[in-house]
Image (cartoon, rainbow, N blue to C red; front, side):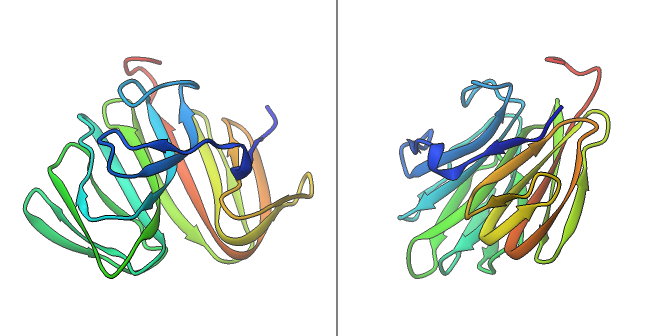
Length: 193
């Protein structure tokens, strides 16, 4: 199956589940799934104000600050500084989570997986790299800053453009900036498979 190119300019921003911000969905599985029935979901959010995060029962999250001064998160009463750009931070999506912005609005990159059905890993690349989606996995490459080029098809990718690779797909790409490589392991034999 050929990799799927997902352009940033084709997305429509939508309000958060709790109405406290705006998010643009990069990719979701199954396609068309909503907030309550996705296996995994990847998005970019604009956070303009401090406040509580939406709760997602049974979901694990990985959040990465892309732009802005960062935030202090309190997750089930435990404080965490999430103020360095491009450093993924993992936490349970069903934990009570409060966000305090550290001096202004931010943009963040958000990966959510239903923990009974999938796992995710996020790695940050700043130099040429290659990806391969092994059996039962998908790999999503998202440009967070600058640009990248998908070599096999010579496809240029701008900010927040993405490429989704399915089982068996592989590719290499050049990077002038920062990209996130998200490996989504869709566990076989679990409900919804």
